[in-house]
Length: 167
Image (cartoon, rainbow, N blue to C red; front, side, top):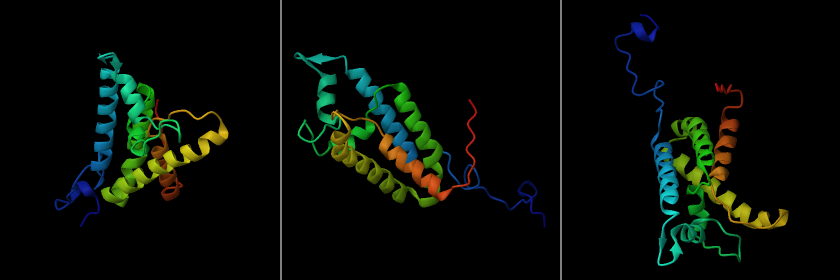
């Protein structure tokens, strides 16, 4: 019997890359939700209703404000889905897909989602507590804290993996 896949008629590959999914469920939904929020925020930011800009309402409600400066508890979660500009969103989502895909395929969707959210919440809490120590506290947005957690996990799990970037 041959060990080559192409010559074995019983070989079954359940999904792309020998069992790994190219877009695992959590990665797919995080990509979709971040892009959707980015488009909605940019679409509605310029609209004014009864003298109030929707952009300023989004800013006040969903950005992560410093403690005592407009902070609301839900902002620890909502700030992860708002991005400042296209390249901020693009690179966060690229790193999420590039490194998070293998983590989700290895750990499973539930464990990966919990890890991602805990990293984002931890980054938000660290920003609330340590941000004022290093300078003037300002509102925070973006998934960068959660993405850095994904990068650290990938580096810890696959320390010898070469990363090829073809630009």
